[in-house]
Length: 289
Image 1 (cartoon, one colour):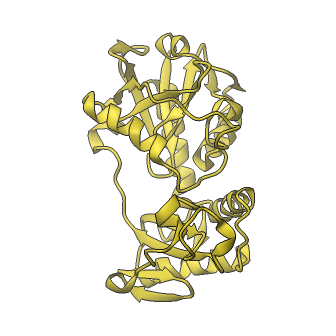
Image 2 (cartoon, rainbow, N blue to C red):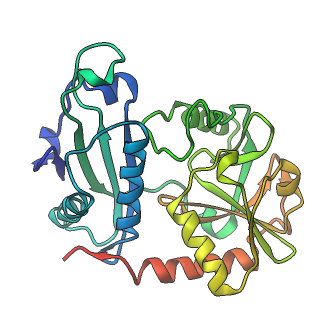
């Protein structure tokens, strides 16, 4: 495997970062996860724009242009001969002195991994997930802005641990007010009376790229859509539920906290969105070669 690291492609065994890198020491950095379908990188420009927005939000000045990072990403995919797969693009504050002061890091560091990923077993896409509500809450926007895809993922990891310990593959995370934010790594959507609903960004949801695609598809499919504050009650009483994310794509949910959602099986609206998403994802994107 070839890894793009600070200006050049290197073998996986040579892809190393300093123990003084602030991304490792303090979680000081940002990242993106991106999908490859049929030799095209899906929504690459949108992902890179969000990466730069995240960096700007944490005052991480980047020496590369968005166009350059797009090219480096495509080059990494091509170097690994991937037609389908997953990209993890990470920018850290870089190596510096010990201590929290980010201004003691002379320059940021960037690496790009192009490989594969599989979050959930194949059968869950057919039969749906049974998920739980975890006790771990999403931080308030004043503590950590949910729009920033930072390397501070301990909050999500602890929520994932709760899910695993409860023999579930995923967990719903609430904010401090009790409203649904998102799952540990995915956005959440509901179908209720023929309408598509999803939590507000200000309630703690990430402004996901796949989330945005589903909202676009809702208009094309003629499905009324609304962003609004949601509670567990709304999930319990929904007709359908599904999750979205770059790695997860679109996956149905059939139960929350052992309470059946809808019929207990993936519903027709979920099937329509899943089909429309795969059709779009496999037919559009930035060509690798």
